[in-house]
Amino acid sequence: MTAPILQISGVGKRFGGFVALDGVNFDVAQGERVGLIGPNGSGKSTLVNCICGTLQNETGTVTFGGRAMNGLVAHERTHLGLARSFQLPRPFVSMSVADNIRVPLMYTVATRSGHHLSHSELGDHCHELLKLVALEAKAGHRVQDLTQVEMRKLELARAVAAEPKLLIADESMAGLSHSEVEDIVSLLLQLNERGITIIMIEHIMRAVMRFSQRLVVLVSGKKIADGEPQAVVQEPEVVRAYLGQ
Ligand code: ADP
Ligand code: MG
Image 1 (cartoon, helix red, strand yellow):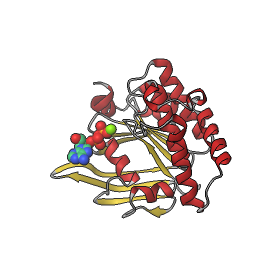
Image 2 (image 1 turned 120 degrees about the vertical axis):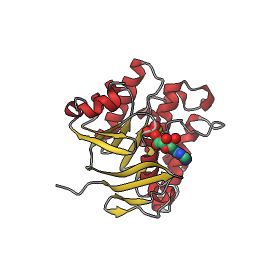
Image 3 (image 1 turned 45 degrees about the vertical axis):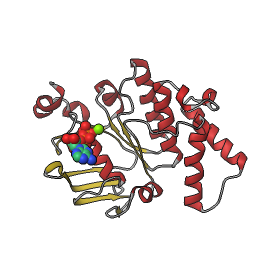
C-alpha cells in the first residue's frame, strides 16, 4: 500500500458563527477517482478551498504528498501539484484560447524548474493541451466566442497546464447537455489514465456514477458516507439527505 496522496483529517471551517465544515476526515489514494457529492451548501466548495489554500481551515490538517499544508497559500500548493477548476470558469477573457493556456504553462515551468520555455516548446506544449481537450480549432479564437462546454474544457486544460498530481473538478458539468456531460467525463477519465488523481464534485449522478471509484457524501459540513458508489447511493441516510430530494 502506498501512502495516500491526500489526507483530510478533522478539517473544520467556520464563517462567523456558521459551521461550514465540521471535522471532515477522508483519504484519497494515488491515482484514485473520488466523487464528492452532497446538497447545495453542504460545504463541498469550502472543503476544496481548504484543500487548495484559498481558505485556511481552523481545525484539522490537510496533508498532500505526505506534507502538511497548514499555512501554505494557494500558489504554493499549486506548485506542489494541487490544481482545481472553478465552478464558474475564470479565464482571461481578453486573451485568445491558446494564450489562456500559455500563461499557466510558462508560469509552471518557470516556477518548477527556473528555466523558460522557448517559443516553439511553448507552442508544442500548448498544442498538445488544446488537442487533449479538442480545442485545437479554437486556438486563435477569443475566449468570449467559446460555447459553455468549450469554456469548461479550457478551464480543465488550464488546470492541467499546471501539471497537477491531484485535480479537483468543482461542478465542471453544470448546465451542459447529456452529450457534453459525457465529453467532460471522458476527458476526466483520460486525465486520470495519464496518472492524475481526481476528485469530482458533481450533482449529475449519471456522471458521478460513471466516473467514481469511490463516493464521499457531505451533508451540513459533515461526512455521512464514504465507500463503494453502488453501496453509498443506497444508504438510507444518503437517500434521505440528498438523493431523495
Ligand atoms: P457547496 O459547495 O456544497 O454548495 P459551499 O461550500 O459553497 O457549499 O458553502 C457551504 C456553506 O458555507 C453555505 O451555507 C455557504 O453560504 C457558506 N459559505 C461559503 N463560503 C462562504 C464565505 N466566504 N463566507 C460566508 N459563508 C460562506
Ligand atoms: Mg460548490
